[in-house]
Amino acid sequence: MKPPEGRRVSKGRNLGEFEILVLAAVMRLGPEAYGVAVREEIAARAARDVAIGAVYATLDRLEAKGLVTARLGEATARRGGRAKKYFDVTAEGARRLQESAAAMGRMLDGVVSWTARRAG
Image 1 (cartoon, helix red, strand yellow):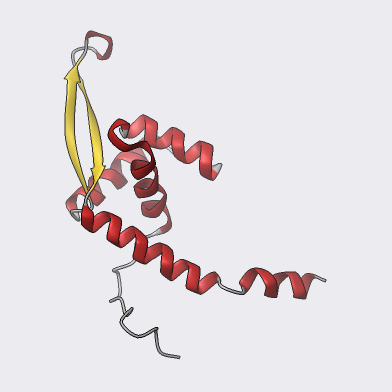
Image 2 (image 1 turned 60 degrees about the horizontal axis):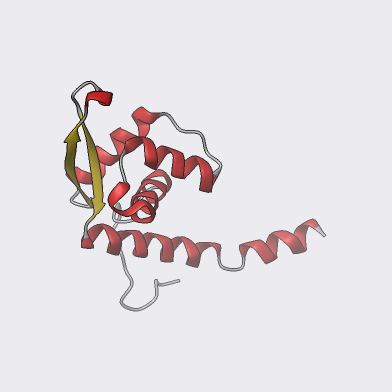
């Protein structure tokens, strides 16, 4: 079966599951998206406890791919003079997230009803 017309995506173009979670969290958080907040958003919405290191590694990878940009906030005494690193989704990141979500939706279309029929 051929992919829908005009929707062919090259291998490796779709995002992985965790990249999708991280990008979606950054989009939801808007200007307040930094590592710890992204981790908390994923825990709250996806019921998934993830290591903060995995979040930062993924944010760095997404930045290298041009899907997010980073900016430094103000350094604070509370953080020992360090600044928070905030992230924003780029237009390309939003587009890739949409493509990946649509591809996943196409793959899952009908699977739930099929599973329910088999179980019953």
